[in-house]
Amino acid sequence: MQYAKWIGNVMQGDFGISLKYKRPVLDVVSPLIGNTLMLGGIAYALVFMLAIALALFCARFEDTFMDRFVCRIGTVAFYVPAFWMGVVLVLVFSVNLKLLPSSGAYGIGKSGTTASPKRCTSTLQLSSGPSGTLGSMICGMVSMIL
Image (cartoon, rainbow, N blue to C red; front, side):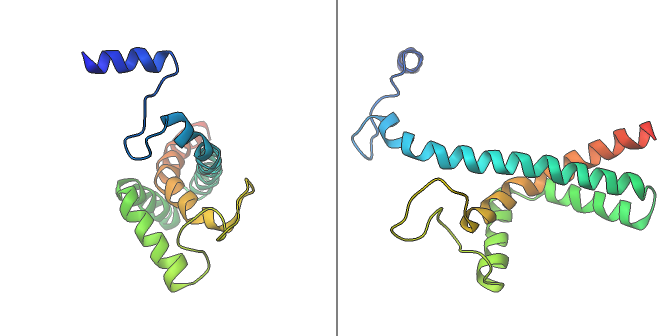
């Protein structure tokens, strides 16, 4: 019954009060929506660009070692849990290679909506698994057409 009441309130735009911040949930979440949409949008675009590139590569080199190798990597990337892939990517790009910062969207004391290198690790994490799977699917379709 309580869930039904909450759903009714959500339908009217009332998400309730945050238990942690003691403020309306929309007031707490709304400043963060821009970064979330930007990260999701960039990852979504990257997934399709990588998938099409991998598919064309696999279709070009069909039934070769490289085709099988790329398909296996895509399968492994799909089945690796996202939280583990994120930790590994932070370890590789932030700790070992020191190419990217390990967290945050902006520098200390700065804010804005422009893309920064700090978003790269999360974008790679979000796009790694789906790219391989989608690439394999597109490769199969391209191979049937050719």
